[in-house]
Image 1 (tube, rainbow, N blue to C red):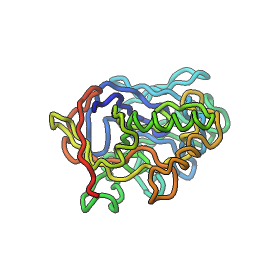
Image 2 (spheres, rainbow, N blue to C red; image 1 turned 60 degrees about the vertical axis):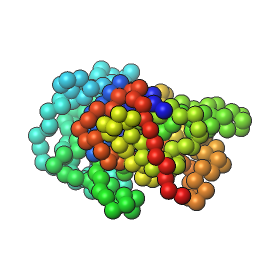
Image 3 (tube, rainbow, N blue to C red; image 1 turned 180 degrees about the horizontal axis):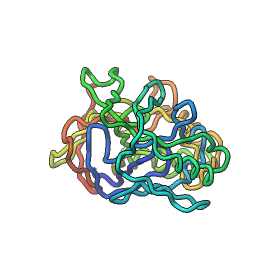
Image 4 (cartoon, helix red, strand yellow; image 1 turned 180 degrees about the vertical axis):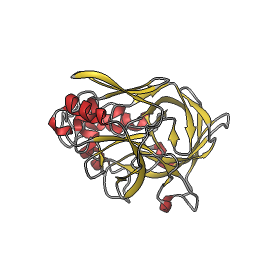
Length: 282
């Protein structure tokens, strides 16, 4: 098996960036989910509320985070940490410390997306703060993350996407690309749902190891076309995933595995890396 894609999402719920390699840290890939959009109550805003967020492209230069959209000139946000008072922002049930970016970003969002973006601002994770991963699935260990939904890495496989798309086509639906699932690491694997049986995934040369902790329950973001910000087929692919019932002991639709880094902090992960898995104990 080998890694076929690495994707980072510097701003939660905006477009991802395909990279050929990345630093790998306990908190995730380099720059992943470092920023987040929040509403006036400082609660996180995603494509669940605003599917059009998918139309905002993201780029990282040596000096700046660059946001772009067809309706407006790009805006650059310096990678130097902003000056200002820390805010307390909310991701699901977690309260995190964050630094507010310029109000210019808020005005830019309204120009790009219209009134639906009114009251939204951009914040940056305060790295002196530690956001812990839920302990229930860590087998006594600990892990932390930035503004991801809950885990620093999401691993998916090509075999599982192929199986889902075969089911979609059999139901008269259109196949979906991998970007619907917003993974960080995509592994070429012929066996559908093989990742659900993996305990660990490691570089064959031993430079890093990830532990697969928890199946990823999917939400309506999977129904959003990540190129257009529209929903072409209501409830799909969620409806088909539910019918496939890949996690029969759990309620809901699942695709991919939430993961943590257990060896290799500060190393490098690359597209093309050969990876090996170990199996979960029955």
